[in-house]
Image (cartoon, rainbow, N blue to C red; front, top):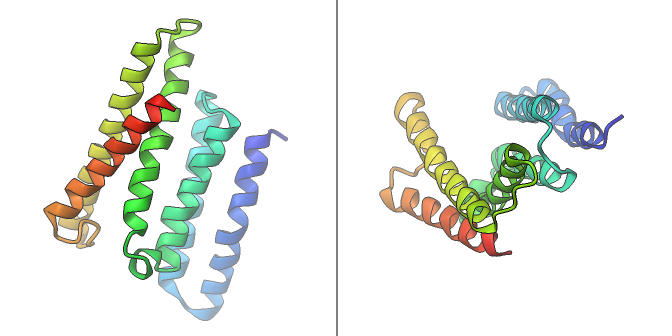
Length: 173
């Protein structure tokens, strides 16, 4: 069994256990968050199998990010309990997106190692990721009635700035 498959199966243990607990304790919100986490983990695993781009470290960092944001953040109310949880995740996402973009670039370009172009591609991919995520949050708030952006332009701008800042740091690490 491939290491990324083992990592995914291990990551699924807590959401599966939470789903079972949620069913017996009639906690619909926990059940939905657990199922959403399992869907994200499964979807990412399938994507990895199809495109085969991610190193084990990148794969693991994305799995951890999914567990921290989708599962821990929502299921255990970490967004509410820790006021900077959201900011921490937006900052972390810039680093992760830089790593992913570098691997995608190298996969697409083979042995071409133009360091400046790799850095630019990685930076702009991470910046685009931050922008698209905020568009997603806005859309959810607008059409589903959530409050991911806290009805605040300041929240949105800080999220984008943190993603850009970590991407800028990430391209030089």
